[in-house]
Image (cartoon, rainbow, N blue to C red):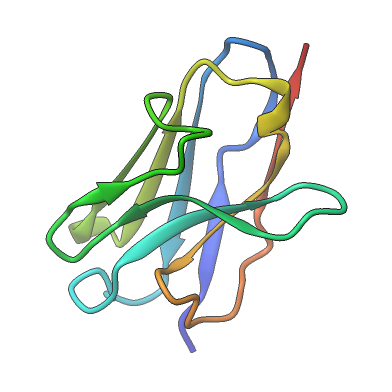
Length: 114
């Protein structure tokens, strides 16, 4: 079973930056588009960044221009660079395929203080 392990979260002040990483146990980037998702307390999980097989990226308006998704195929690692963080970005962040095929990892907590 494919395993997803997220890391890199933490506590940061508003306007700060974090770089999240997701290590995947198998080579799946040539088969599946990937995405970063987040879930804030009491809210549904939402997609915040996606990358297609052809490396086309997409973002919702809420993070566009601030978040950047990338991947390292050789290392089976997905990244999310988050700049100009805002308190509303506080959530647990997860990675998965574009259709959330695999079991969710434990996520990584991002907390942005005002």
